[in-house]
Length: 129
Image (tube, rainbow, N blue to C red; front, side, top):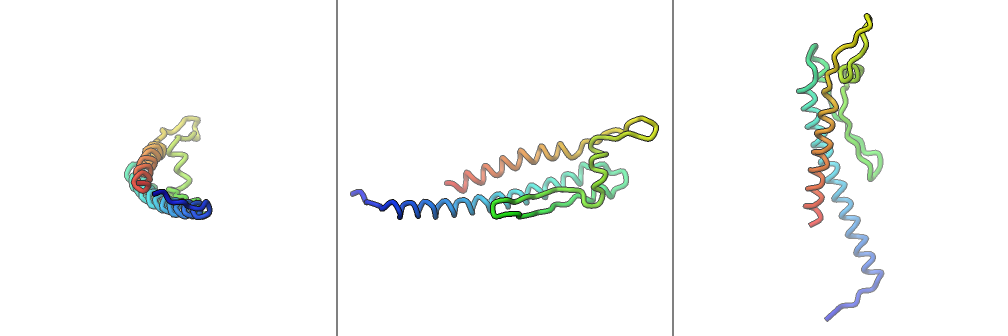
């Protein structure tokens, strides 16, 4: 009761299945990236130093599709981008001292890197079944 399948037909069927699978994974990556980017932006708005108030409000998300298989989401400060490094690491003052560092970007980055991996892995596992 076995059926014989020609190699060309089998190869085409596998190729078609893999193309659909890659497309589904790409959609999952894009969706998860957008979600994580927005959550990271919101958390940075809450945890950023609020001495003047404008710095914390400037966090935004930029999305970019460079190629078919390359998608980026960048969280950055649109209004006061010059302050991010100075606040994160501190800086020298005129009189030879240093200012206090307020690490607020790196903890959010590390948290959402792990969260991105975890969410994407669960979506891929659910898609492959």
